[in-house]
Amino acid sequence: MPKKKLILIGAGKMGEKITREIINDPTSGLEVVGFVDDKIDLNASKKFSLLILVLIQFIFFVLSTFKNKNSKYYLICITPYTFIASLFLFIFRKKVYVYLISSGHEEWANLLGNWSVWIYDLMFKIVTSNATVIALHDRLYNKKNFHVINSSTLDDKWFKNFKEARTDKVRFLYVARINPVKGINEFLEMFNNLEMEAELSIIGKTNNLRHQKKFKSLIENSKNINFPGYISSRQELINTYDNHNILILPSFTEGQPYVVDESLVRRRPVLIFEDIAQIIKGRKGIFVAKRNATSFIETTKFIMTNYSKIQKDIEQNNFPLEKDMFQEISNVVKNN
Image (tube, rainbow, N blue to C red; front, side):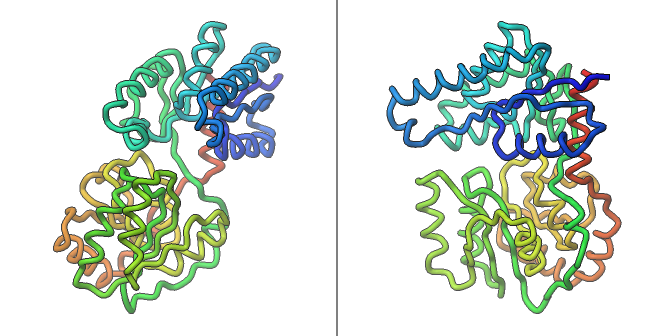
C-alpha cells in the first residue's frame, strides 16, 4: 500500500520530531513531503513592509506544496501564519489536521493583552471547524473530528541510571517558559518570603520583555535562586531533575505539560496549585497546595517527610513514550 503524503505547516521543533519519527518508523504509513515553518523573523516584524514580504513568501511556500497531489496537511498550533494557510487549504479543499498543545487563548493574551483574545478565538474557531483536531487534552476541544493523544518527551534515556535524591534540604526545580500564564513571578514573590530553608533552580526562557524585567528584579538579590537559563540537551536536563527533589509547577492554566512525567519518571515528586489539579489524571507523586505560603510549606514538608514512600508510589505509574505519541498521531492521520 502506498504511503500517504503529509505536509507540515508551522513546523519548528515539533515538525522536526514528527519527521524524524516517521522516517525511522517504516510502519507509519506516512511520508513527509513538505515542511513549511512559520517562525517570524523578529527583525522583519518591526517593519510593516518587511512583514508583508515575509507573509507573501510564506503563502507562496504553502501554495507551492500543492504540486504534491493528494497530500494531507498538518498544522502545528494556531498562529496567524497557520491560520492564513488554513484559509488557502480550505479554498483548495485540502485535508487538514491541526495539533493543539494548548488552547492558545492564554498565550495570546500574554502576547497582546486581554483585549485581543477575540481575534485569536475567531482564528481558533475557523481553523478547527475545517480540520480534524488532535489535542493533548479533552478540555482543549470536544467537538466532532477530535482525537486526544498522550503527550510525551520520554525516550529510553529517561529510564536509565537513576540517581538517589538528596533530601537534606528542599531543592525546587522549575522547568517551563517564563511568562505570566506559568505563574512564575507570583511564585517568586511567595518564595522570597518563605520561612523555610530551600533552593530554587529555574530552567526556561522568555521573549516577553515586560515580564522579563519583573522576573529579573525578583531573582537578582536572592542567594537561593539559580537561573541557568534554557537547557537544550536531553541528558543535561535529566541530570538537572536528578540534582533536585521537587518539581514546582505554579501555572494558572495547563493542558498536559511534559515536565510532569519528566520529573516523575526520574522519581521526583511534583507540586502544583489548585488551578491545574485536573492534570493529575490518577498519577501518583503529584501534590496540590493552595496558592498561599502556609499551604505551600505544609505540602512541601509532607513531601520531604514521606519522600521514600512517595518515590515507591511513583514507580507504580505508567509513562507513555515519545515514540508512542507519534504513533498515535500517525494512526489518526492514516485513518481519518
